[in-house]
Image 1: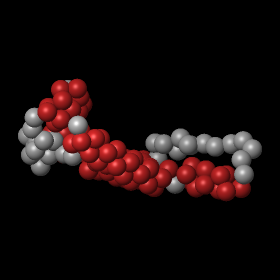
Image 2: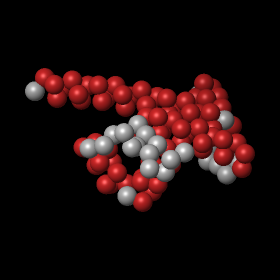
Image 3: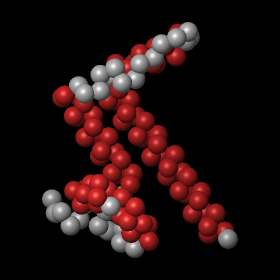
Length: 111
């Protein structure tokens, strides 16, 4: 684990200089930082492991009210399994982000 490249370097740079590190990633050197989608997935998995061990997010997602049966059962599952729901959400966020990136780059190539 080198601290001049890779995951530890990305965490350090985003914690100390977020704006500059993002600007450098977009405009200059993309080899030193971890790709954003991979970083998001790794951080989500780390969050899940820590939350499973230490239970620091108990009751974070609480749902109540007059909801239909399906919505209530989905909400209860999310509340009981927030760690896994977080990983599922990351997959959808990453997919939509890649799709958006694809359409944005296609539009730039047309102009």
